[in-house]
Image (cartoon, rainbow, N blue to C red):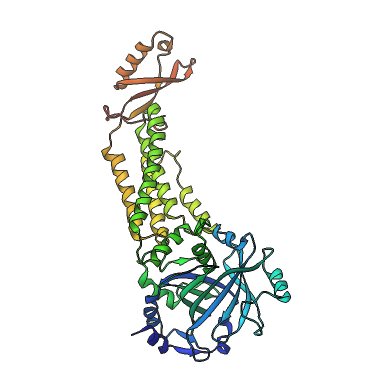
Length: 463
């Protein structure tokens, strides 16, 4: 069945019937999808939604003329990931020819509040702003000096209205952005926006979208993509995308229908290798060269690798206060000072937690292949460091020694010989600590080769 046939099967609804579903104050969820998915989504949800019909048309052409100031403050606030931000535009609705000056405000809580005023039909829909419109813009737009940019866009939109929920869904296809002397389009990509009074992840269309959850990201994943930001970056390659960098790179490849996953893997491997080399220099070249403690080498390298992969793959996840506090609570349970759990087991606990968080969250912004690769890297590195890689391990015993007369200068060899006879270990070096002359005792740290004398356990707290 064709897309048009699936559209025609839906029950129509008029503008005057939408009511609360107009949602001028709402919470938005945006998804980048392929145009060929739309037929499947509509077929799955044909009984859950009506389609907006205006003048007998169920798909309408929209035109936008974007507004920002000379410093592109709106653009910069978006790419920096600011929660509270503003967008402004002139929009022409092709179905009825009406045009509006619209200002959208995003609150720190993610709610979108839209204000708009109609434009006169006597002039072109994108005619310069008049005095009343400038006053409206100054009153509602947070950035000084807002003006019409030489950038516009067109797209075709269908609007779905839920029959049971206070929910409206728009699906925009055939997006094209126009600059002064060039244009860029999104090809077969479409933007679906779910608009609700309160977030409801059990929306029928979102449930139907799960059928495409294994597609190349960011396809089918919730995203914060803005048409204004995407269009600006496509038309101005010299601008720094910042938080949009990864998404724009993938959109570029998806537009060309050739997604370079191999390059993503290469980039991850090169970055991982760089982090590992840096950690090896610090831990082996500096720390282990002095201390000879193998268990801490294992701990440091595994923590460095796990944290790198965790941060690298979660870079696109939006982190609000609750999420940040949750991560803090997860990793706050790890206490390397405790005697109840040995440090090696604590390291494994950290790795397990890191992988669990990574696997739970990273798939929202990364592909399955990258997540599997990250897991494999941790597994292989753990196996090599903990089982296969043999480096010298200097173990430690803390001894309460009762022959303080041997502590005097010139009797070090005699002291070590006596300690070796008593402890049964071949000593590499010793450290003399607290000396109690009243009880004729001293605390001595005995360092020995733990690999050659495995029958001796190590004192907790040794250094």
